[in-house]
Image (cartoon, rainbow, N blue to C red; front, side, top):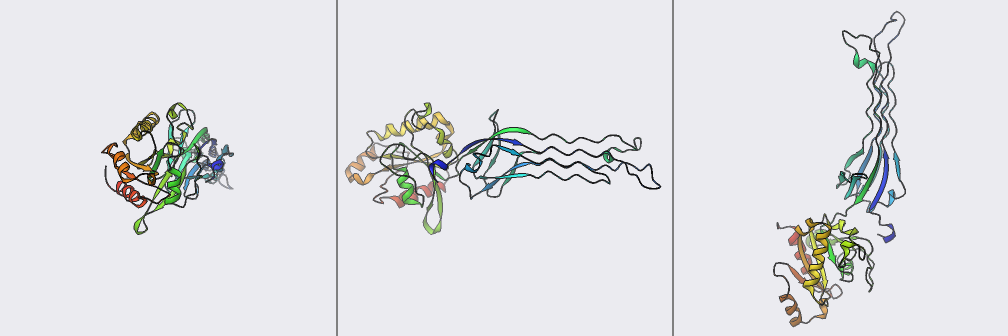
Length: 332
């Protein structure tokens, strides 16, 4: 996905359709001048509906579509004829899209499955015709309901990528290189900080035609929670991941300290992220000999599954896949 086309946040105005009015009508025919009420019901106003689609990866198609206006329902007619319902507006969105009320921030709905349809903004109910109000004591009701108004609201659509594994690390830790090696994704790779400006997804092939999805987000730096670097804007994309794979270069002055900084930034953003299962990949380890690798390993936390890898030399890449697969399919 191109960086300038990755849109994961849009604010749109949704106006559902007004319900049609019920009919206030009485049957009249030759020889039957005083027929009873026969007013039909008004049609429902059009809904605005979100539908999940695996063919979409961003909210780009909604970036310039700021106003969604559904059709009003038609009024009821004579002879108990109901009014036509207003046409719904169905908007396709990528899986992982969350809708929130723009004023309160309250979550309205979440799309997580292909073809899933949920009503974002319901249309107004059609009014009942006067036929509904006849009774033994009121055989000629002079009343029919008006249609309910539609809803006019501003809604925020926010995308959180659905992936099994989220890559977490400082800039130039080798996250994008790993993703390019283990999947068909083609993230931008260069030798300067913040090469990755938008999240990237890749499907990683595993043994016996199995696979899992890996997400690479822009690098985090100390102080990201205060807005330094690219801040924490993209951390929402790992909130759904089952596993967090921390990636730290072997030439880091202090791997433990760097790991602690990353944990702190995640906690500042959302403390629940620390409850996820974690793995550590020490990258660029083709530069290490066995003695130095053993020395570094001895200094790392013993409760953190760790693998020394090199994406360029293909060192321990399969071992890393095995570690990820095991973590995905065993309970914590």
